[in-house]
Image (cartoon, rainbow, N blue to C red):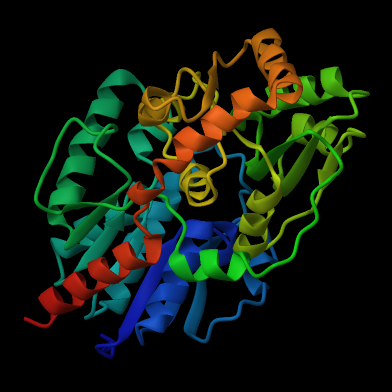
Length: 378
C-alpha cells in the first residue's frame, strides 16, 4: 500500500492524456490551483499520445493499457479489459486518498474494489455508459443496475443533469458543462479577426460522424460561392465528412487549439453548430459544453430538434433548432439570417438574457473537491 499525501489525487480515465478531453484538462488545472498534487492512470489509445507535454506537474503518469484507437463502438471487449486492469491496479496499489474516475467504465471497477479494500472514489459520469454503448436489453438492464450501485457507493457522483437518469440519490452533484471563469477571462484577451462576411458559423470540438459532420458538410457545399456566409472550424477531425468539411473553400480550419483559443473565436462568430445524431441514444440527452460557451458570449447555438436537453434554449427562442436530417430547412434558415440580420439579433438578445444562468465550471469543481476532502478527513 502506498500512502497518499492528503493533498494528492489520482485521476483515472480511459484516454491517452488529459488534453484529449477538455473536461479533464480543466479538472486537473483546478485541482492544481487548489494545491492538489496530480497522478494519472490512463489508457493510451494511440501509441505515443501519452507522451504529450502538458503544463502540469505530475507525481506519476502511468498508462494502464495501450492500443485500440478511438473507434471502439464495436470493440466492447476492450472496455471490459479496461475495467479489469483498473480493478487489478486498485487492489495492488490500494490508494488511501480519494481517486477520480471518469466514466462508469472506470468507476465500476473502483466500486468493486471498494468491496474488498477501503477506497473512496469520485464518479464523474460525463457520458452515461448504458446510453453511450448499445447492449442487448437484459445486459443493458444489468449495466443500469450497476450504474446505480456505483453512484451510491461513490463519495460524490458528478452528473451533467438528471435527464439521463431514472434514479436519484444523495451522492449526485450536478456540474453543467459550462466554461470555467479563469479560461473564459483568458480567452477574452486573445485578439481574433472576424472574416469578411455577414454570417459566420463556428464548428468546434470533436468533429465526428455522429456530431452532425455529414449535415454541416452538405450545408457548406450548398453555401459555397455565397460570399456573405462562411465557416470557422477548430478541433479534432474524425471521419470523412469532417475531412471534406474543413477542405471546403468557405471553411477556415484553425486546427486543434487550446480551450482558451477555441473560446476566443466565439467573439467573432454569429452561430455555433451543435448537432447530435439521434440514432445514438445518449445524443438525445447531450449536454454540450458549447451551450455554456454560447451563454458566456451570447452567441446562439444551432441544435437539432431531437436533443431534448436543449429545451430550455428552445423555450426562450435562444437557438436555431431544426430536425437533424433537414438540410433544406437548415439552409433556408441560414440564408434568411444572412439576408435579415434582425432575425438573428432576436436570438442573440434572447440568449443574452440567459447569461445569468451560467454556473462556472471551476467554482463547481472546487466545491466538489472541498466536499470530498472534508469528508475524507473525517
